[in-house]
Image (cartoon, rainbow, N blue to C red; front, top):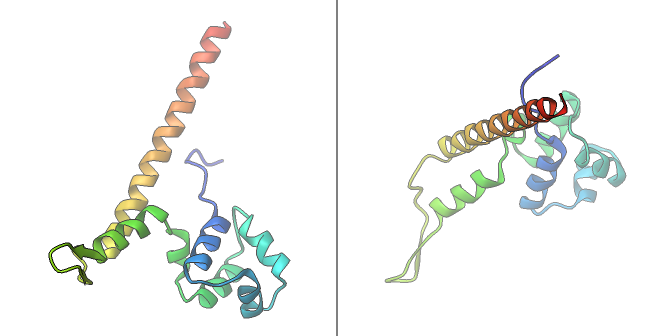
Length: 134
């Protein structure tokens, strides 16, 4: 039995990536040869078979790792660092001020640390409640 934090919800990540790509469930369903209801079920699933995940990744034009490590915070950081408005000229600056992959990894690591802290807090709470029970 694993003692690590609960795995991330892969279905929600697929849903967010699909939405960011401007794709409807029906379009993804057609792309991978399943029904729209199957896509709905997939997006409500915490885990997926690697074969299904590969088909979805190909249809969404992302890697499996991209789906597994997807983070809304990282996307917002990338957008924030990529599309800066220069108030003096009101022009867009499309130059990245940092490496988007590094930002994604940093965000993933921060999420991992947060989950570990939350897990420890829950363990402490259980220990405290057990102590009160005695």
